[in-house]
Length: 357
Image (cartoon, rainbow, N blue to C red):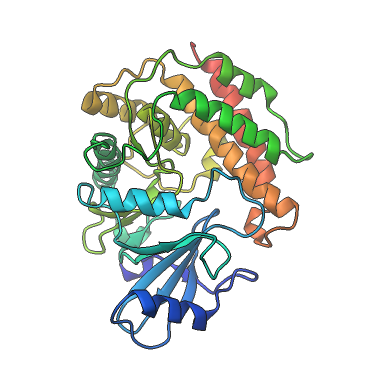
C-alpha cells in the first residue's frame, strides 16, 4: 500500500524557503544531519504551511503560518509546539518536536517549529481501493479514530504541566463571541453575513460547561498518520496550532462538524475531506453514544455544539478566502472557499431549524 503514503508536492509559487538558510539553521540545532535537504510541501492542508525537509537519512517537517493577513489568535506555532511537547509523555500520538523560533528571532519573518516526519499513511476523502476495506474494517478504523479523541479528552492537563496553557473556564462564551467577531472581520461582499446564525449561537449558549480538558481543535481522519503496516494504529495526530483548554464538547462538536453521513445535504457530503462515508463508519448518533458512554458527559444539548462546529468551520474557510480575495495568497484551491462558506452557513441554519433547543 505504499501508494497511499503521505503525499508531497513541489513548493507552491510564493511559498518557497531559502534552502541554504534552512539547511544551516537545522544543522546548527539538530545533530547528525547530512547532505543538502530537498524541501517539498505536503499536498494537504489549507491553513498553515507545512514543508517536508528531506536529508539523506532523516526526514523533518517545518511548520509556519501562511503569508498575508492572519488573525492574531490563529496560526500560533508556539502554542502548537508547546502543547505537543507537554502531551508527548502521556499521549503517544504526537510527533517529536525539536525546536521553535518566535517571529522576532526567526529568519523566516514568522514563527515556526521543526518536528520529526512521521512515516505512514495519511487519508483523504475516500479510503484507497487497494486496501479492500469492508464494513468491519471501516468500523474498526472509525472506533480507533474516536478512541484517540476520547483519550485526549481524558488527559489530566494539570498533571502534564499545561495549567498555564489557557483559561478553561468560560471557554464556550469566548469561542462563540470570538468566532462571530472573526467572521465579521473576514467578511467579503460576495458571501452572506449569517447574522441570524451568529445571534442564535449567542442567545442559546449552554449554562455551564461539562468539564475542562485539552482540546485539539481540528481532529479529523485526514489529520492523522496511520501505521504503514497496521492502518488501525494511529501513529500521529497532526495540526495542534488551535489547541486549547476548555469544554471538550466544543472540540467534539468541531470534529462532528466535519463528519458527513447519509441523509445530509448533498453539498455538505460533496465538501467532505475525510472518508466518513466509507462502509462501516459510524453515524453521528452512534459516535455520540460512544462518546457519552466513555466520558460520562451529558450530550442532551449536543445540537448546540454541532451548530457551533459547523459555523466555526465556515469562519475558518472565510478567513482563508479573505486572503485569496485580497490577493494575499495565490493558491487556486482557495478560489471557491467563499461558496463553501455560504454552504456551511446554510447548513448551520438547517441544523438550527431541526434543533429542539
